[in-house]
Image (cartoon, rainbow, N blue to C red; front, top):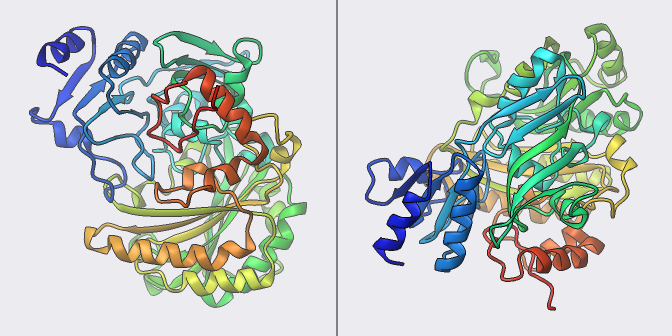
Length: 461
């Protein structure tokens, strides 16, 4: 790759081409997960689709390793690479709402907070995750679970179409009638098939919600987890609620008497009035000891989506492990509590997010995301601001996962996988859908240009 070729590439871009000699190179290459340190040769900060086409063509012609960065929230750092080209979409952040059709056109550099900001004035929301700094593109292509999932499905269940730059530089629109095989694969197959530059989502009526966290001390964790497990199947789908094991953060506004104490939390959002939300939660709260605090209240939905943003800024050390969970027997609950109690830092956590309701009403082969018979998606997150704690996070996460995995399904959520997962984990995740994914990959990316991801190998032709 000559300097002349690089110069020609820069001239083809409206956006910037950042190199290691630039003063802002280190800031531009920095990842959300500071445990991952990669040094790309070039970073193309694209501002439009033409820039993306130029970048894809350049990477293909120069035989460069290629990584795609959307909102920049990826846990295993798959939005970057060493010695290759990063297509950085973070400057592409347009959101256009059609309130009559209840649809939202979203650029691939957007975070879920960008979308919430645009949709909330119309009393609408798209089912995304639980942290507003999460990138829409990565969340969507992996599946997408959050507070609205039980009622309205996964993020991909609300995807109507996507504009995609393919490995050959062609731009296509994928939906149910155009490139339906690609549309099927994008809904859960990750970034394997091209660079999605925009998404069209179905939005739903969501405005003020009854939402927030409820905390108990860890001594009540078994009672809370058992009650939550038994409560969930009959809970109204308007209530998106998950259970977690964590530590009371040693900071305001948490009660100082409980700072640093191990805890069990139920965190939820009811899409409706406070009175209806209280009635929905009553069977759970009546079955458990009194909490140390209950901060559920009426609030705008975007406020709930961003409630935990201050605790998880860019630049922390992260180590994630995940599983899909079918059932939660008492023995599994005991194991979760025991392992969570060994957490090396106060930020470490484990959550169980519901996979039920609307998700179960979609067939396993209707989208690439096939875990339609799971009950929860589990994440173990080792988190520490101090780089010296990285190895302790990894040890804890792996030990925890090895202890609970025998209770769980074989596959896991690709958005919760690090890049050190065992061989075969991806095929177990997609199950019967993997073979079709490999065929779609062979059609749209036969040379595997898009391989810095949870990679699906192209089927042999």
